[in-house]
Image (cartoon, rainbow, N blue to C red; front, side, top):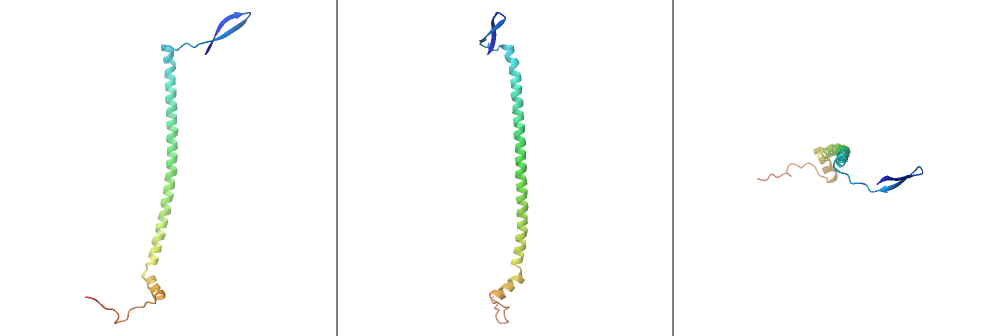
Length: 114
C-alpha cells in the first residue's frame, strides 16, 4: 500500500492511502528475474545442506558398521579357538575316560564286519 500526498495545508502534509497499481510489463520483469534467482539460490543452498547432512549420516552409519564388523570378526576368532579346544582328540579322550568310564578296547573286543 502506498501513501499519496493529498493536500498541503498550513505547512502540513496530509497523506492518504491509495491502492497500489498492478505492475506492468517492464516493472514486473524487473522483479521477476531477481525473485527467480533468489528462489534458485535458496533451493541450491537447501540442496547443499541436505547433501552434507546425508554425507554425515552415512559417515556415522559406516563407522557403526565397521565397528560391528570388527566385533563380529573378533567373536568369530574366539569361537574358532573354542571349537578347536572343545573338539581336540586329547580333550575328548580325557572326558570319555573321566565322565563315561571308557577305556581303550582290549584285543578281542573289536569285531570287524565284512
